[in-house]
Image (cartoon, rainbow, N blue to C red):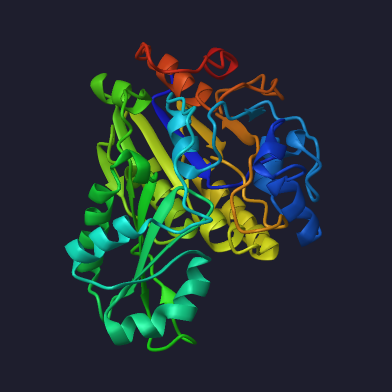
Length: 395
């Protein structure tokens, strides 16, 4: 049995279009491969050592023998390509009905009117937009009026932006809590409300801060995190894990300001003694580079992660398991600014492994959570999907 398991989600770093990607407008996408091509090759010696080269024609990587790690691709069984759906599937929840979106129409007048009334703030925007662009376009007006900027994307989200010099952070969070309550109506039930605070005196100097906060829908069923918790295993969430699961099954939550900070926090946790799961989300790949269609910045972020990954591995014990995966794709060479419907990589590393190799593709992200439970001898709840990846616990 592994005593500690570290599950790191490289948010949006997909590994190739799923069979049904054309239904999502994402045929031909491949985040890892296309980023490597735009970079003229990725410098990722640690990931290369772990076997990432097994999973595609990633420029700068090669196929190597990797006895201490297993590699594979996972398909998403749920109907979606968003953060909430991907993470929750990892922990055993199947989502068949896609979350409601307001990309083409903006939010209904009734919703906006109710949010204005309860928040006491005028609402501007109410369109699908890039977060940085809408702040540039409407930020100064928002500051003059004391209004809040509401916008959405191709995801099931209602985002609220405000300059904290005019609307304090605590008030912005309170407004988001109001929005979460209002949008629990079935016809308005978006997956997440997201607080998007920014600072700066004018549009040329506006910067979004790291005080983002997500207010997700309640999970609504038992998941692997609950099973771990009930069995007395510690569950530590790093980054936006707590927000994604609405706190479900999380014993300890650690806020992060960047990928680098997230890895530093994870390295610090690896120096602690505990039995259970450290679940990490590194959001910068997605929010700073994928949505902004910046493949060079994306590549730089992957290379920076690879460097810190070496530091983390050096802290791991023989009875530790490291899992590295993603929750969807966000190919920065694709059209638009939305996530992409992709398979995700799964790399499993332990110094106790001796027979590591490339394994067959899996049908669902939920095999991650199911395998974690099996490691601890925990029976999943009946509603949970997923099968055990036997090689990961029997090597």
